[in-house]
Image 1 (cartoon, one colour):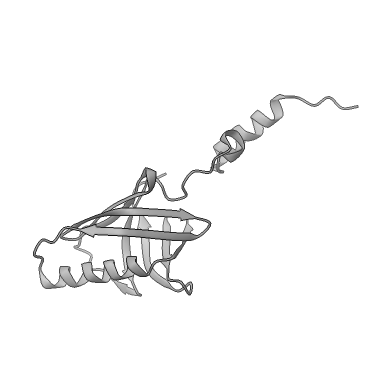
Image 2 (cartoon, rainbow, N blue to C red):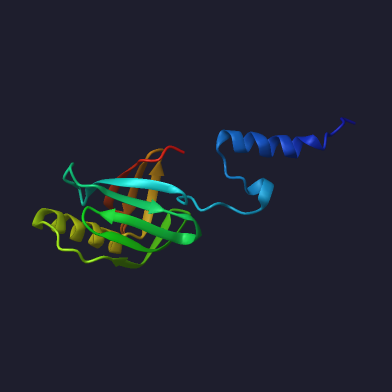
Length: 144
């Protein structure tokens, strides 16, 4: 009868962590798939954002979302699991912005309100509507 080492489950959990797999086997809990990441929108409804806009979204721990729309800050809550995404309620400051920036912020908010799912491919994130159509493409700005 072959000898089974007790070290094997620990070794497999360590290899999973090194390979970037979820540490569920070690802790019994799955981490939030977007928590701790920051993203820059590159397109909304297929239209590129002005390159000079400073726009970002941060998916923080404890289901908190923070961001900047180019002129105003936004904050709210989110949950993400299994390709499903729930955002809101979202709040945004109301500074007076230049018309092109204001229009881009309104597009950003409208896309976030329609987002119901996501697809992540390394440093690319696509937010999807309820029918699975892309509403926003983003690029990760913080290396994992």
